[in-house]
Image (cartoon, rainbow, N blue to C red):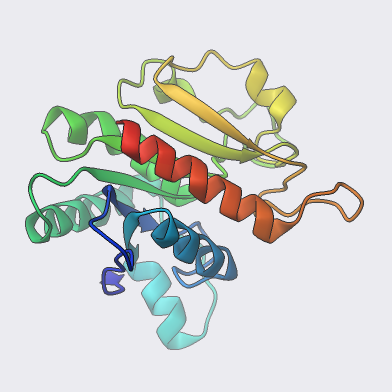
Length: 215
């Protein structure tokens, strides 16, 4: 595991601290995060990004490889939570989350962490509700009874779970969904939609900041 230095809002005290990790194939400094994080900082959210060790190995070797089974990444995520919780003000709200696979991992650990008093909420960016073109392979069982306050920012036409798909899922009432206008998995819209990727990501950041202020 490797983490970037904590990034703090330029003005005033942060409203919350977000621990953020990446998806299966993109690192913690992906173009998506490089647009999202400055917007979060402008909206008052402190951010710490970290990478799982398999992504660190990809970065160092230059050779692509798939992530390990998701459960094998749980110890690294929990270690990152404990490390950050020990470094920040104990009175500051801490929220966990991630992009795609990273958000899925956070969501599977959130109830344990909130019960232990370590976190206040969960943010999932482009949650992988199912693999593309396999809507029958749902990854939602643990979301039915989720107790942790959560915000899912999801593209209207994300192949991992469109707006139409998600409308049919029995999700916990603890989950709020911010719909990204005409967005794909990385919040990119089609050319004539009237939306832009940058605008979509910045709107998601504002929704995240409002959520972090409310939990």
